[in-house]
Image 1 (cartoon, rainbow, N blue to C red):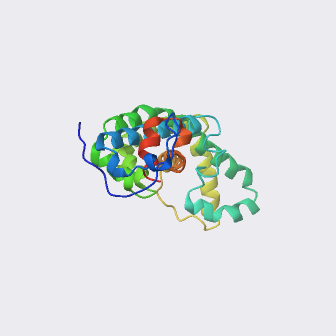
Image 2 (image 1 turned 90 degrees about the vertical axis):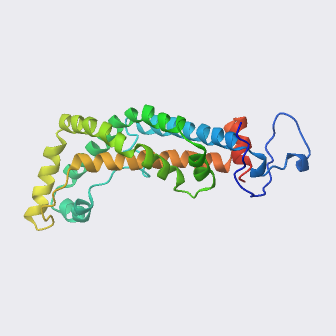
Image 3 (image 1 turned 180 degrees about the vertical axis):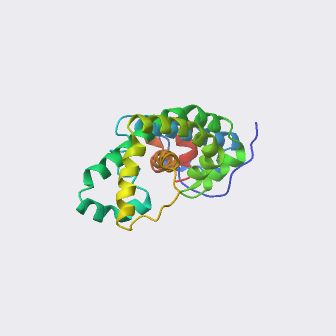
Amino acid sequence: MNRRHFGRLSVAYTAAMGCALPLRSQALTLNDVSSSQATQGVKAALEKGVRFAVDSLGRNNGFLGNDKVRIPLPGYLEDAAGLLRRLGQGARLDELVAAMNHAAEAAVPLAREVLVGAVKSMGVQDAKNILVGGETSVTQFFADKTRVQLADKFLPIVKKTTQQVRLADKYNRIASQAANIGLLKGEDVSLERYVTGKALDGLYFMIGEEEKKIRQDPVGTGSAVLQRVFGAMK
């Protein structure tokens, strides 16, 4: 077993491990956590995050009902939204936003297998980077390992869903109205690719949010390995 240690951060680990030990005897540092234990802990945390993210986003209103990940109008339409609403286009704008978010919700369940596969293939250096990295370390790991593959998987589902709800028609009606009043300059934008990118951003964000909870309260996870590894980081 690889017993190399991850660092020399000295911290208190106060999680109960089944018996009430004196606080001094419970003190752990990252030097007390082997690289194999640390990797196991990070994998457990990320798998938990994947389950949470996919389950919460891959359902009806998973994106639309979550202010943190709701997909907004593309920037150029968002900028024009105020005037378009005053011109009576509010309902169409709302329909467009709903359709984009529902397309993302339909695609997200496809991510589970790819994300779990990335976690299972994680190496010691990947785990170390996440364990001692900043708030974007999880997002960066998944983006590096899975973004291209997931974009290829998501895009056909997004296209199929948007075709079913006639998203292109909804978009074109809004876009033509914006162009008529000089608010749209004819940018060549694939709305489906925009939705795909935002769906992935939301997915990685939610995984990161779950990991933050684990870092903040490893005892609350009920997992001994998460308590040991992330407790040593507190």
